[in-house]
Amino acid sequence: MRRTGHVGIAVLVGIVLSGASGIRAGDAQDNDSRHFRKCSVATLQGDYGIQIQGTRPSGPGGPMESVVGVVIRTYDGKGAFEQTDNVHGSISGTVPDRPGFGTYVVNADCTGVAYLQLPTFSIEERLVIVDNGLELSSATMNPPPVMVTGVHHKIHHN
Image (cartoon, rainbow, N blue to C red; front, side):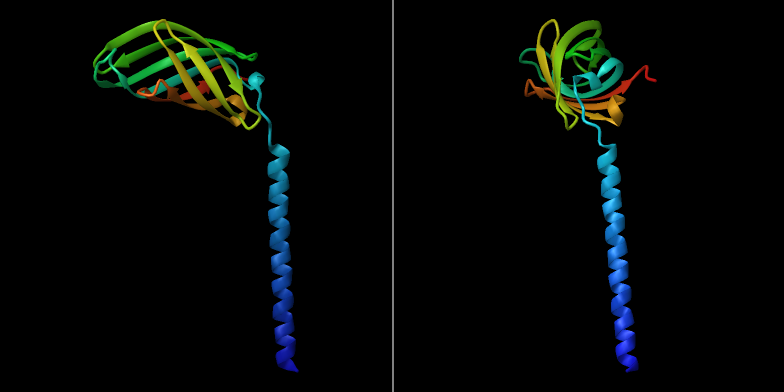
């Protein structure tokens, strides 16, 4: 009799513990889904400071070079942006205060695409928006030889 009692208590404790942990997991999922915010083009609005780094061709037909730079980009919240960048290539040198403009698309899952037009070429960037639009990560997808990543921080926010 005593053995059966101990086994029964052990089974009961196991059921209670697994049920309690299941409740906690469900609660965490509910909290995560309640705080999930969908993104749109309006998520990106205002001025962002961007730091870029990577590699690119040093010129038409030229060798690859390392590149670093800083950019200020202003998103209008409607799918367009303007920017000014300062980029330094290890072979090509510095291009100061180069203007650019473009368009962007944002998906509900907070991914997006920016199409940047510079004076001599175009770039396609893939974006991931984090922290309700206070930060973005980007990677250049086109043209293929350009391998540049960026970290975007919102400059002014409430």
